[in-house]
Image 1 (tube, helix red, strand yellow):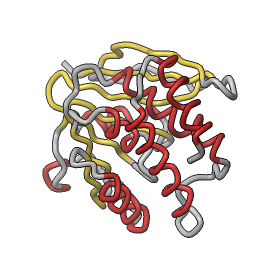
Image 2 (cartoon, helix red, strand yellow):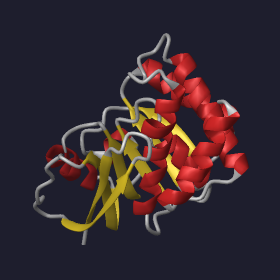
Image 3 (cartoon, one colour):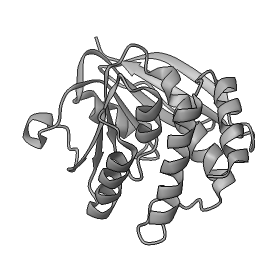
Length: 210
């Protein structure tokens, strides 16, 4: 990734409230380069312009750190190309991330990226999450997150199966997305932010179990 984009990423991440060191920004740049390179053969993203990807992928993913709270373990359902979990794993080395994806080629990319970036706090698993963590050999974690996976009304109750008590579900949605109440799990907070280049308004809608 070009230095001008790296510098812009560092500045805008600070504005979002998620400071990024130069070393972390370097890793984020390497990850983005790998994502766009693999995307030529594996369908990982519709965005191919690096400047747009810095905003729509990296900054949007980093913003999710605002909703992690004290979580020390996170599952991402429908991980795809690793957004937001790989950027989060880079800037939150004390948090363990499990990336769940059904498509083998995408899991191949995730494993390669995690290995090349040297992220001991991230792992990718090829499994279809159906709400039964024991049979799926998935852990129960402090938080479950998803980005562009399924509509919130379906995602939130599914994600709740993978939580420890007092765990949180984080739905990353646009400003226009309707997020209703979900039986059995309480809405805890909504965090709003604006992406700097496009002006797109985004929200992190957080639910918490008892």
